[in-house]
Length: 603
Image (cartoon, rainbow, N blue to C red; front, side, top):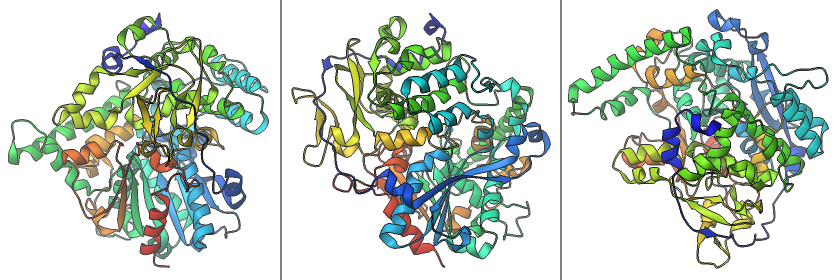
């Protein structure tokens, strides 16, 4: 079987090895009342995918013509003026790794609604898609969303179009693209993405005075680091003329489970980790080594010796990154229906890889099964298996959506967990791999359902236990994101949440370029490296996210930003923590971010 041939199998064996007895979760609680509905929000908030024509240049110009457009999700009050300069405040948001504009579909809509209903303010939120999202063929997803309500019909269309080479309405999917087909992506890096941020803000708010008064720039995960890059950027490459610098075009900055930091401090962090305590030699060694590595990596992209996207054909592929939207579209048509698609997804190495990885508690399961296809899950519960922090092994996908319900569960006790306790290394492990105790279904005869965040625990009954009441699966403080809101963001509208073709150039620029003085030699105009100190800034840090372990290690200094610790939140929760269930949970992000803007805007 394909499972014997997975790339990097040894790493994932370490992550998934475990054992443990079985326990059956207790019945679901009734859930909590909502203060308002999605329909109420949609009646007030307009969400449109805006496009700005901005032709690509140089090597990048070989991309399809559709890529000559910058696109972003614009969320605003339906009755507000079309001119963004008339808004009380505007928030430009950059997504994290492997994510698109719909990362902010829930947060943005709720912010606009709350600002109007509770404060009488008209704000806008712009969720940005990076350019590589232009390569995604979302035709069948958009057709199903607009015209199909039957789950079986939706499955036939999506599986047929994307996975079985079946045309739909005369249109045929061109296939998931590989690195060799994407030579132009070598130039889809931080320079292009940052220039696109400038184009959006200058097009939507032409007057610099307006941007300085009411435009707040920020992002999630990598988007927070990208915000620091934006603040440091000098558009014309002349550091003596600062009107075109990022920091001179914003009223403030924010980061969601990320940090805002002077770029010139990052090399010192890295130098401090060099072994043998090289002292004064540490920083020169880092600068020299990274400059050589950077130029070599860029050359590797050009020759295709380094893949131009961060995917792996036989494991974490572009096809795998398209699965969440397919699962979400089906979950919307019938959340409690048994997933037939689970059995019908293609028997290919990459799909088999993700199926096995999600449903493995020990090495015997991984190598010999049973695999995920042999179990029965509702369509909604598949969303939870991919993204919930109790099941998704990868910390950067962690969201607090609730828990499985309806059948026997067993612990995952990964061998990698011992690394979490090691000095230094443990903090880095925590940053990408969840240290939370996880579980897995064990009964192939049971249909597993999903218990939403407010169905597993409540302020009056704070623990989700087994039927005996002795074993605790999760608790109220650790669950705050509604799986239905999260599912909507995975598929809703003309764009989506997961980015199929996230470019390696962005990673190379981030690690080997922008932190160092040689960045400007390679077209990265980060001339104002300490610019994050020049604007008001706020950081929201999940207590169970990917940044907190690095804070604990002391690698991230306190540079005077307002820092809000989000108790119980995982990496994706800052964008999805419920905003309309006040009897159950208080959202600490939205009100605080709106208050930050109110304090620092000058209109």
